[in-house]
Amino acid sequence: MKGAIVVLTLAAAVTSPSAVSAQTVDQLMADRALLNAELDRCKQLGMASVDDGRCKTAREAENKRFFGTGSTYTPAPVNIFPNTPTKLVPAEKHKPIQCAPTLGPPNE
Image (cartoon, rainbow, N blue to C red):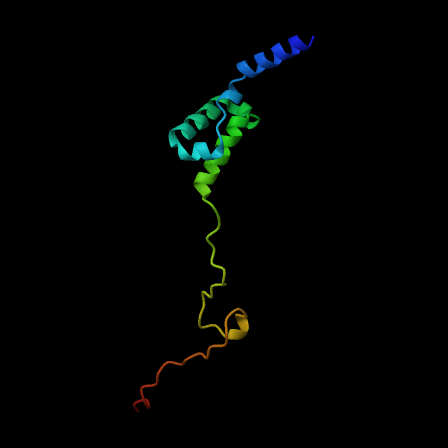
């Protein structure tokens, strides 16, 4: 009885192609041709690719390649209107607003 279970387990392991050729995200990121081949295979599967483990790994690698490693935002708020009064922009220190230079009295 145990011998039959062992034989069936080995047969399932040998015949399952996804376990043999499964790649990690890092391996797919390193080899662009391999990633493209996996994504093409997933396109051929259609809706079945949603539940496929190899397709999930390929999509994760493609997202990591496309979006990069993290955010590149500016940590300090950006004042796009620098001439606004400081009471409207609490993140900026008080700066006096400079008036335009005067050229002298107007000609009469």
